[in-house]
Image 1 (cartoon, rainbow, N blue to C red):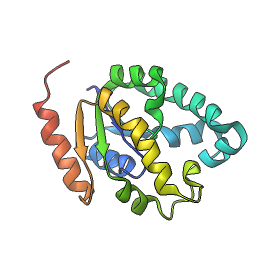
Image 2: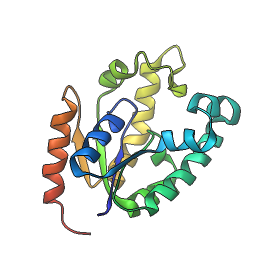
Image 3: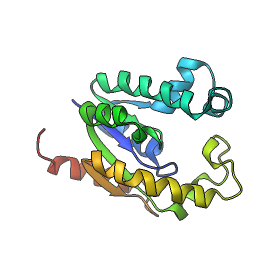
Length: 172
């Protein structure tokens, strides 16, 4: 079975929904950020602090390239994974891409107490999220096979919608 690759902004539910989807389909689940942490032995905020965003993105690109070569995975990506053209190409070639779309308000509510979000360490996280979404939304849409709304929806319902809509997709 080809991979199912979940993209979207931070707080969209990529990891939560990815885990449930993998369980439902009896596939292995991989979170690209967790894979980076395992490979480096350091957490994401530390990598950002020491290597900067560029260093983190280099590591992310390598991990995504590896994961997309495997088969039968549900892969949750980091919110910025789509920024590099090489990543978009690997994701698109690596399987079916599912974009979990959510509003900035929902992102704020879901990430409010999370200290593992280096890009939100700012006086105005709402503005940061709005700016990121303006840049990234067209890139998510560019590679998506499915676009799923997650605002105020329980993860289980989102998974059921994904499963139903995957059956409707033409072969590629």
